[in-house]
Length: 449
Image 1 (cartoon, rainbow, N blue to C red):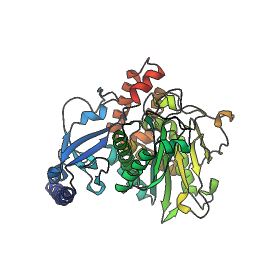
Image 2: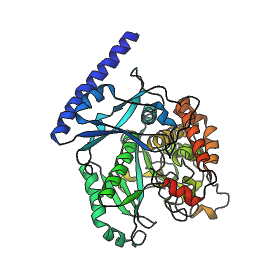
Image 3: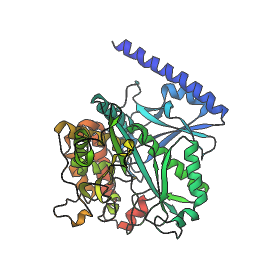
Image 4: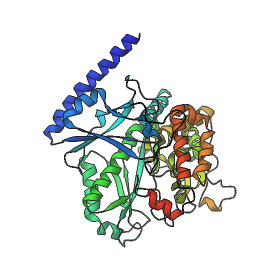
């Protein structure tokens, strides 16, 4: 049995090598000299190993090495440890997903592919964040549910200009820059739904078309790094941290999602609240119920709680409402005749979050709500700060982490190794920023993500 399994792993490696060899030939013909292989760590930073295009066939088969200790790196590149991960020993293999291989329009001579991590034996690494998102996607599919997801990307351009919030003046001031962002994304096959100025001076937001949960997380990485590259070409610095100025409105990393079954959007045409199906209602109720614990994943740094303030459209209260931009869970019915438009938006998350952990954990919480037959509470209209009995979400990372450590659902879904690494990193970052002022926290994190 073991020999047969080993033979199967060798066959997979040979097949990947053949596919990678063909891809390398195509990339070489297009002038691509190197490929960036990325993964996102528990702290939310995108890490990379780059390889020459001429090495892609070997890398496709066997990957490149990377220490498992990166799972316990912090935002400042210091290192903590966890009960199951830590120290200098061991090695993993980063293997690129060639289906996502993309020539980078804003980095001439470069391509990109997201990578998954495997043990030296070829077995999947059980703390790989991207494989976690894939496992949860399969778990939903086993229930007959297809998830479509998409992240909003918000960032602040430094130096900012004088254009007003949401104002056309800001587009005029940065028209060449915004146009180049759009052109680069289009060249990379990314379908942009909209791009516009946001509230904070110098702030923009871009939304892209929904994808499967793993693909949505991949796009979150690709979109951000494309914006970074275009910004640098224009002599600008993009800030993706949760807050740039702790007195202002921060950057969100809102997640949109819809549930589909047999080609039908379950967020529309049902008997549940706002026309959603009962399946969709239970799934969303599971997310809402788990949201205090989910913040340890979606709002993962002390800086996140400078952003997560009432009356800033950040989703600071554990409530939902149709088209309520102050609710943590906003339901979007969509216009008549546009079935694909109905979706839900989780507003409490920010760009410090690992998008693969976000998509996987949200699915796990939603499926738990479905299993329990949960129902949504009454919706909230208006600013929940004025609603009697409205519950604030955790106001600090230690509070959110306390709720996370109590979650049997998230521990089972993540597995002990990844769960404990998340706990260790969150505890260490809490200690890292203990005693610092909001301004110091913002300055230390705004340029790290």
